[in-house]
Image 1: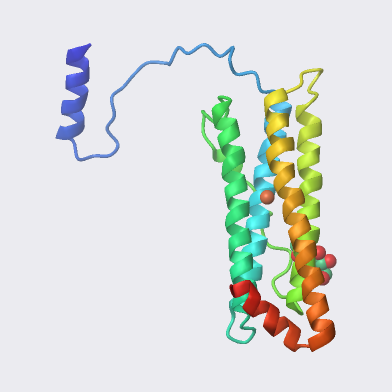
Image 2 (image 1 turned 90 degrees about the vertical axis):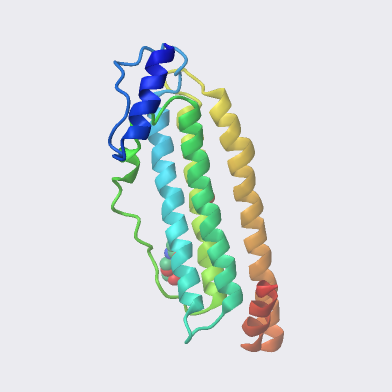
Length: 209
Ligand SMILES: *[C@@H]1O[C@H](CO)[C@@H](O)[C@H](O)[C@H]1NC(C)=O
Ligand SMILES: [Fe+2]
């Protein structure tokens, strides 16, 4: 054993080629611990795509409000942060599948999607962008509920752990985020009602912190 390890270390050090690694036969790891159902995995992968798509949609919003001709750095900051959060959600879901022994044969099927393009690229106002964001979040919430529905009953098998995570962590974030967006729209509309278009300028400063 010791000699094999030493030989491997030697081969690794001696070679500058990244392609070289120590050969081993087929791994013989019991698979009975992998109890997540295929239908549930498929639904999770769809959701990972949705999170990535939401991330790109927020990137489009952030880029739009960053332009010199629009110049709303506060809105841009908010949407760049939202894009990062969505990306983080995608990572969290990937981690769930990794923990459950899925994705071990590669992540290629996660990156086959071609429909990640943002639906909208321009917005008439910051207010409209926040409203679109709230609608987007409501759609994502509905889809997470769909994943829960699949994973809590695949031919009578309830994936208690995953469903608990999606319900307690993911839905919690969705509802908190939606409430925050609704509050933001409310405040912005009040400022616009009393200050006209100056309202958006002032709210942008507030978002910038
Ligand atoms: C795109 O714009 C339409 C019309 O304003 C809106 O109804 C829809 O929610 C928007 N979609 C996204 C993802 O922002
Ligand atoms: Fe998300």
